[in-house]
Image (cartoon, rainbow, N blue to C red):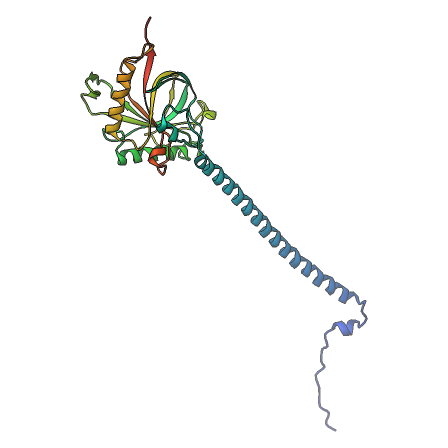
Length: 291
């Protein structure tokens, strides 16, 4: 009789062959492994959810701080302050509620006031060209100073904006002035400096500008005669108002213009301010008369 040979079949153990009871050790091990894998999966998901929530809260908090800062800065312009007014023109002028120089009014007339100004620091740059209020030159100088104020310095620090922006006529070394009527004129071309008043909290510890055209300078205590006016500033207007201020001070019994005093213009408002609300001041350094 022919017998057919059949290869033996290797049967691998399964859960059922190793034990069909519910409490089988193998089943319990594999169940534990599945539970651990599920736990790790849930832990990973929970970690990702927690991270997303933390980032969301951080973004919301950051947005709230930015919004609060924006509202605070806007309020300084939306709710400006005013100086003591001598006339209707000054009554309409308004300046942003920003830090400014400290001074004490010594004397007030219907044409000017005399102030004793406390020391302060400025960031200063020389303006290109011979005009102090040429748009291109003024913009270039303003941008250089603003860049320093907003972080282009060795500390990479952003500082607070202040008022006013000063534009000052200066003498070059070796040049002298001729006194002519109606205004002071120079034999050589005029030069002007623009400067930003620095926040007082820094004192003499201001960060160093990265732009070599920007200089830090201390302005010492001084006495100045000041006349305010509104509108946009132009060179011809400055010349006229300088002459008017010098002429008015000739009649002052206590103060006189210092020898070689140069005209200085302070502008308090951002460009979007309406002309009749803008405050500008023209000033000259003065001293008490002898005797």
